[in-house]
Length: 303
Image 1 (cartoon, rainbow, N blue to C red):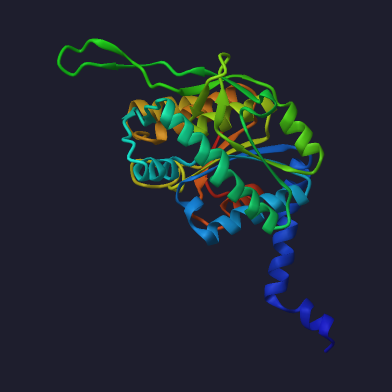
Image 2: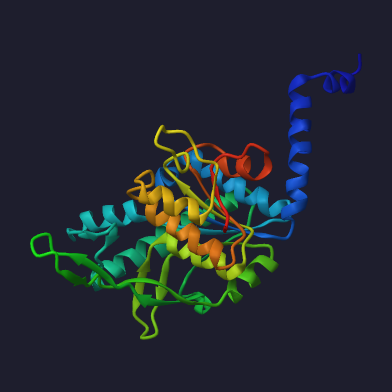
């Protein structure tokens, strides 16, 4: 038997060929489309998972899909603040950010983390372009307004979060230019307000707004859980905004998953085709979600 015949009868090689055939309709469906990926959590701190992630986005670009990466960095900001003796305070999961904290957040997000991600992508054979919301007026931020209730009087109180913002106006020109040039934009969630002040933006919120503005085929939120789980811990694979509202009201969806799904709902109702919450701790989870019939997380589509 010749070497080529050996290969033809090798079960592992046949399985690889079958995997490629399974992926073919998805490759055709998403060619030329844009995926926005929010990257963060524990996966960011694991060198092996970081390499997997970089290989995934480079592969997407190589097969004709346009990945756009938006990264977080809350733990790294927290570490730097502790090293510098700056105390952190949170309201509803958002860090109260004074001017000094905003400067440190910008240094960590736009410096160390952003360029590390660009380096990983370069190591995987891609061309990453590290930017923030400030570059090319990509994002003009507005100050986040929050209220809370006094536990004693039940009075609604205004909370000043400082320099915490949310996207107000998005100009995707710099992203589209980078994609057309064969690059992979890597975006730090920092933006300027109309007054020129620097605002720190939640990375999920930033990614959702950019996905909506681009009319992306997919928004991926890589998290530290498999996706949205039911009361018995089973993965819910397909949800609509109506489903999410009902599950939140009954208490199945709670805690930190609520703002993530609010981001997904906003994105799909504002122009993104679908959003996916999936486990960033699983190697190549994004490829499994995109290129297999079974998928790997929770898919959210508009009603």
